[in-house]
Image: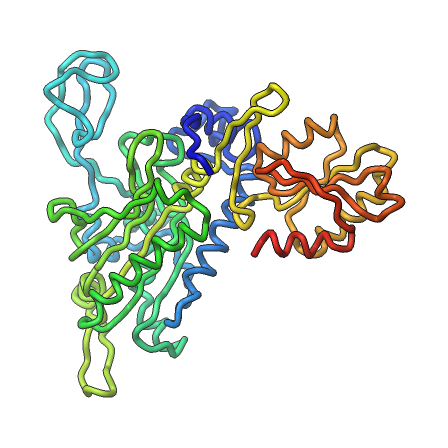
Length: 436
């Protein structure tokens, strides 16, 4: 497929609102900056992203188990992990217009991007974690934090998982869940937000095997984006420089995507060595080491982490799938999703209201079979095709008057626009092949 150069952030934002992918949160109250709600199409797309991530993550020889940790975290956890001390961004304020910015994204020798006046405060650190109080009485309350990442609930439950699941090193613990960061400047729609969902894998291995598994998971994660159908010309790997490594990392590679606003991180793969387990041993006093039956010695496992934001991948897929072409003298917008990713797999379109009953039987049969399917009777067949194109539906089945005689429907392909007649009893087979 030729690269589509017509996509812009503005077009994606408009499409998301218009087609029920994403809405500004609390829009009827003027919205909440950096927070979004996902509509019917967006929810389906997110479900497919998470389903495919889980399938791919669990497709390798090593065991991977799931946890679902709490969103609220005790202060002791975040002190041990280093987040209370280290999780912050450099910030400056414009004294003229009172706007706030990340200083590492500005040239402080120039004027404010908002008002043009050069009148900055000193650079200071802005803590990114949301803090809250637990308990009804102020004097007896305790500090807790909304988690800024999902990883720590994996680490603090490491021994619980090890003993109850009877897994053996090497193995992974995966989690999909919400995280919260009080970003100074949320921007670029879903790319940087204050509330988001993460898909994280913490892979535990022997210290001597860490480099091997780090390289393996880097390649596995890059290959995941091939399976999603992302344009590989827009995907690259980038090593972190020493001065940008997180406090817990020995090494890190980012999978980057070439967005309309430049190359940006899509996923991070980090060698966290034994930092997290060692910190929790030190601060909790609990033994989280593993006993090796062969060497008769205990050791602290090392960790390779793979972490990607659902929302950021969601945005990436929209950019990558967005396509404009000309059909019958008009601009047609389509989302050329991989069929496995598409929120709706197919649509049933009766050519006339008189054909509603037999067409609806097909629709209900596909719904019962577990397919994501829409039934659309409103407007001309051309308009209905366009509606399905804009939400990325790969196949549309039109039930016409000939269908009453030959028990066939016309299937129309989203990308090629080719049409063919197939038997009604072959529709499920067609969809199964489409989703392979």
